[in-house]
Every structure is written in C-alpha cells, then in structure tokens.
Length: 256
Image (cartoon, rainbow, N blue to C red):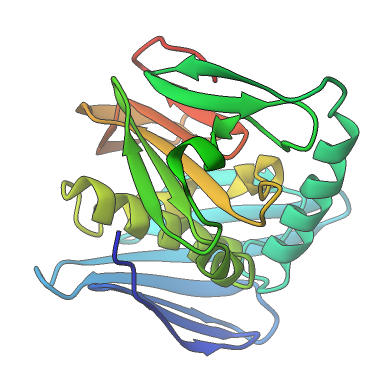
C-alpha cells in the first residue's frame, strides 16, 4: 500500500493531517472543551463535519458529538478525545498492560486462511511477520478468506499515536479506505466521530505497529458505539477489529 501522510500541523488546539487524498482537520478551543472535526475527500470533494463538546467530570469526561446540529453520540470517557497527548498515553499504557498478559511460548496457527502468531513476545495475535516477510516499516495488507489484514508501518503508527484520539480514528479510517477502495472518506469520518472511546483498548504490537482487520463484504448497518440510543446508519465492513479489540463481527468468525 502506498500511504502518504503529511502532518501539516499538530499543536494543542489545531491538528491538520492529510492521508493520501483525505484531509483531516481538527480545530479546538484553548481549554479543549469544544472542537470541530472536518474530513474532506479531495477527490470527490465530499466533506464530513462533526462538532465535539467535552465536559470535565470527577470520574472523567462527558463527550457529546454533533452532526449538522443534531446530537449524534454521547459517552463518558476516561480521557479527553481532543487532547493531542491522550492517544500516546493510552497506547503506551496499554502496551505495558499487554506484556503482563503474555504467559505461553509463541506458536503459529491459521485463521481466516492467514498464518498467525501469538504467545511469548507477541503482544496480541497477528499475521506472522517472518512468514509473509513483512518489515515493521512497511504498510501492507494480506488478503484472507473473508478479511483484509492490514499492517500499518511503525512510522505511520507513530503519526497516529501523536494525534488526538478523534484524529487517530480518522487516520485509521482513511487507511482502511485506501485498502478497500469503497468508502472514500466516510469510514474515516465515522471512526473519528464515534469509535474514539475504545482507544483505551487499542495497543501497538511488539514492533510498534498497529494491525487492522476488516471484512471484504460491506453492509449498511445501524451502529451504536458506545451507548444507545445514539445511532448512526453507515456503510461499513461486516467485520472490524483494531489491534486487540473487535468492534463488531457480523460474519460470526470470532477473534484470532
């Protein structure tokens, strides 16, 4: 995969990142309580805009996401999704926790027609680097029976880590768009808007890379993440997993 990422700006209140033909812009207030996320497909000129309102509470943050003036999602988070330091803190902490879970010696097995490894020295199950001759600095994908298995290069993963969670989700969505050639900027907009709360479950692998799995088959689906009754109707892959967290599995194939 030829992924070109250009971090045009990344400050406390302004993040501008271009991933191939998708331009992602986040502008926040000085106190990080309000922001506008704009995702533009430079090929089709389609624009997706979401507004964020963040309220600090003793137990964390209450986050509201608006689209065209209507409340799209409301959730409680342990971190501020507009904070550019939050993603790095989360992923590094998750990486430490995942090391404690490693107990058995590593071994290989087949899942979705792809050779996987798990166990000692492997933070979470993923395709075998050696078998497929994947280098950590490469962004590439493997075609399985039902899924596309995407490896995000270490340098690109670092760009994701250094971005605010809402932008990180949008970047991952843009990479999936590039691998699928289906959704344009739409999936990036979706991930940036409603999937950021689960970043506390996402981690880097042992090479400092992020893996993503999505189904070859797509569907129109009502999505509620993380809390009903806030729903969005979107065209998405029937399976979506990022690192060690499966978002949904409408194929019924389980986890690797």
